[in-house]
Amino acid sequence: MHRYLSLLLMCGLASAGMLLTNGDFEQELSNGWTEGIGTQYITDTIDRGLGFNPDPDFEARVKKYDATHAKLHQTVSIPTTMSLADLEFTVDARLSARELNPSAPYWAAAAILIRYLDENDNVLGDTRICWPTPHCFWTSSSTVNLILAADTNNWFNYSFNVNDELANVPGVNPPDILKIQVALFDTTNGC
Ligand SMILES: [Ca+2]
Image (tube, rainbow, N blue to C red; front, side, top):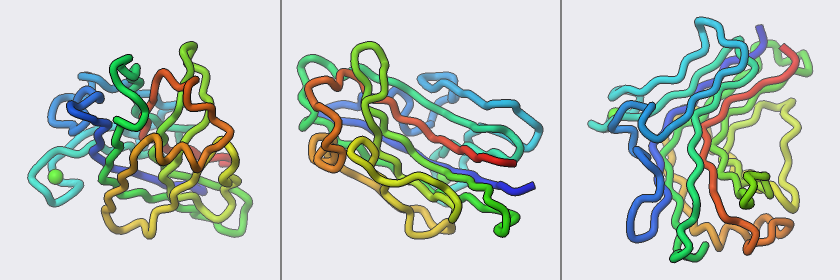
């Protein structure tokens, strides 16, 4: 086996009010969130709990070992009354991924994806707050911006204004963005 990863978080996409449903995970995940695990085994889980982070509130966890991927996601339409500059994204997360056989060209990555979608749900680009292992091929491009976690042991807050962040993905045309998907995502290849 060559991969192990997990991630935990609470997140928000807000202006005057919260756009994400149950972004703080204080309710069951079925409220607002969609789960997806590719080829699930007993070691692959998506759940929520109080104790992943020592704060008194709930967090969500996406953990995979043998599955091809695990994903907890939610897509929101940007209200016509809002501009992209009105949208502030924030998340507290701990990201972890490991290659258990570092000599082999297998890779894993844990990420929070902020995906920019057009009206037909096509992905125009994304911001990836991530922890990729050494063999992961992910790189920043005109449509992808990687924000790397500092380490795998600690929780960090990541916050940005969506319109400001789009300067880092100049291949995405802001007027085309009508929806945003937020996803907690674990993936691997070659195992
Ligand atoms: Ca907690």
